[in-house]
Amino acid sequence: SVLPEMGEFRVLSILEWSLRLLVDPATLFLLLALASFIFRKTRFKLFFIWTVFGFSIALSSQSLAYLASEPLERYAINRSGGLNDVRAAGALCTNYAGVITRGGVIPNSEHIAARGIQLGSSAERIVEPVKLFQKCPNLKLVFTSFGKNLGDEGGESELAREVWVSLGVPKESIQIENSSTSTRENALRTSEMLGTEDRWLLVTSALHMKRAIGAFEKVGMAVDSVPVDYLFTQPPEPWSFSFLDGINLWRTISHEYFGYAYYKINDWIS
Image 1 (cartoon, rainbow, N blue to C red):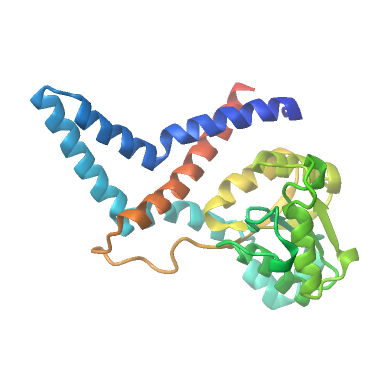
Image 2 (cartoon, helix red, strand yellow):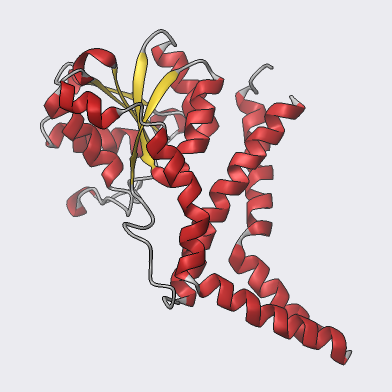
């Protein structure tokens, strides 16, 4: 199938945003809560009240969130291509052309220089490539996100390059792709920049790795995963409950499951 052009990407992005809003757990919770107030008939009202109560418990459960995230994060580990063994054997430097890192790390794209460059909760995406480079200085570090090509004075890609240089990576060892705003665009624009002949390491959040690998393989790139930024370092206790934390966890988890399903459906239709 033929990949969409940039104009089609924009339409798809709007559609994706709308659908993601509808499946957002916070949106669903608010709709259920609103329904419990709107319906006057007792049986309907009780149904929605009990549904809201059950949904609240499910959203608050850390254990349920862990069970939902584990298959995606396990996939990321399984797709690492035996990377730990490769590191130990010293073959890392010869098996890969470099490291591709996805954006979503630097929240202040319109940053104030005096305040420095801030890193978000996914800071491992910035740090891990530098660790790999220190082991193998021949690796090329590639950052793919939005940037000046989209009219920004200095987008995330440019700022990431600054961070890498400040951490000791020579500027000539860094390439940035700065015209993409989604995983699908990351893959397409990066493949256009790098070609598809070499094998690369792909750094992104463990939960997101399955969708990311699918997008890069779709455009013909060979990648092995370097998962970082895990949601859980260990299984939570069964009695661990937090509604606010749960909302954020389930928003992230549902986003990935929906995104993966959406990409699969779109590939099937096209």
